[in-house]
Image (cartoon, rainbow, N blue to C red; front, side, top):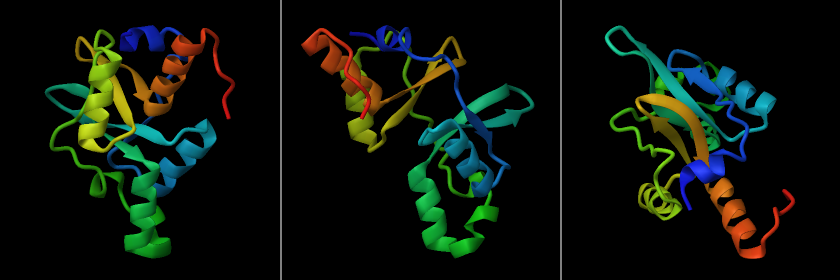
Length: 142
């Protein structure tokens, strides 16, 4: 099974946050969209609008633990590691993606095809697809 097989069944919408936004804005975006991770984008003069990292619920918790109530004013850029974005393509196998997630201790991967962000795949997406393949029918979300 390929990442693209799962993406065909997902809404293609990707919610992003800019590096210069605050934790408060990021948390509101996650809540409004009922998601647990955002793709972090940066505007780079030479490369345009570039995905540079992921901002997750774990980052919100870490910000609150480190900064208390003031965490809502902390910039996303202070919490996101942009050393190397871990991503996949729609032609990658699910096994490869699971390996990347396990090796990097992450639950969400941006899907980038031809240098363009096309989606985000989560461990939940993979689990649902595997359940469907094994049981022959889509499983209801819990």
